[in-house]
Length: 255
Image 1 (cartoon, rainbow, N blue to C red):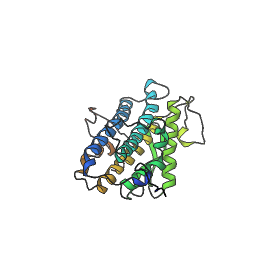
Image 2: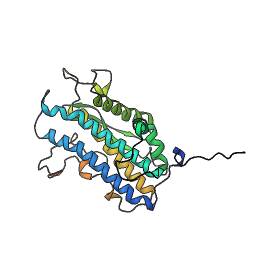
Image 3: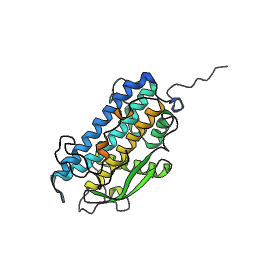
Image 4: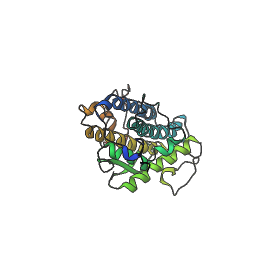
């Protein structure tokens, strides 16, 4: 009789990080921060002047969505690399053709759940928005990990929009909230792009906390995304900008 052996790479083998994983996890967190910095920089560039219609700065909005989703996906994929013992450096691990499927929300939960010792997805509590006006997200509400189906739908809708950006296919679909636009052409508006960035900032930052607590890591704040990114009024000098302006809607995100 041949004994059946479960491979270490199956989702059921994911476990909380250990002391030996601390340096790799810190590197992963730093790389994730840098990915979000690229998206945040585009928001700050947009804040430099009022933009209406199809002016050059409007081209920043699709890229904000693309970079926000990319930072989230790379975070999940590199966590899988650490768990599987394949981590060499942040941003290096390549699941070849599995990257898109490997970073779906359901897959992310199968990874983050055991690695956070069951804290996720329920520990997630994000401040998100139902709509936007110009560059300002509006109608805020709280979405928690206990509402898994709603949170999954929100994440996957942004991933779908990212794919549309990557393939230059932005349909005018008024029935789909994340494609809604009052412009005459296929566009993503600034407030819409900021909703995407705000969602993934909160998901990743709270995941870092849950993973670090499950691993009993000290100095968790050193691993987290900067608190200033979540504030109602970002401090002068943010990312080297003297007057960064309001990033969200004048209220803080959950940090």
